[in-house]
Length: 145
Image 1 (cartoon, rainbow, N blue to C red):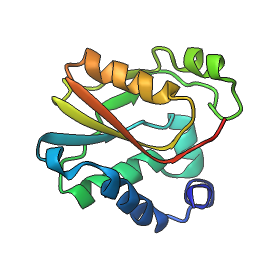
Image 2 (cartoon, rainbow, N blue to C red):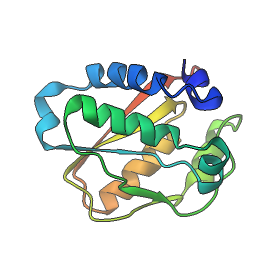
Image 3 (cartoon, helix red, strand yellow):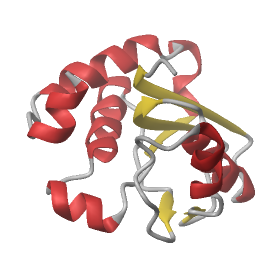
């Protein structure tokens, strides 16, 4: 489903996938939560015609009835993570994200796939540097290494 959504443009799957993510989020702390996403590079978003994580995050926030905002910006283009070994994934993304504004206290970062955690770690680092006290990450799928 993730592949069809991300690479074949089956946008209706965003709501289905977002519902699964929203169900997994602990509903007891959503009241003070802001949702954001790991932004795609400008080139990849242009190539696909959309940002998969943004669309998922907006649907997750809608389902949870919490705010959604672009809190992160990709400050430099990076090669795709797919196919890179673990240590290269980390160095590939070092310093790639920066917060666009002061971060809310509690942030939920939505992304499509979790592989090694390099993207999630770098996104969390940028949000914490901007003032977030808690950063949670939710993805639709996890790859097996």
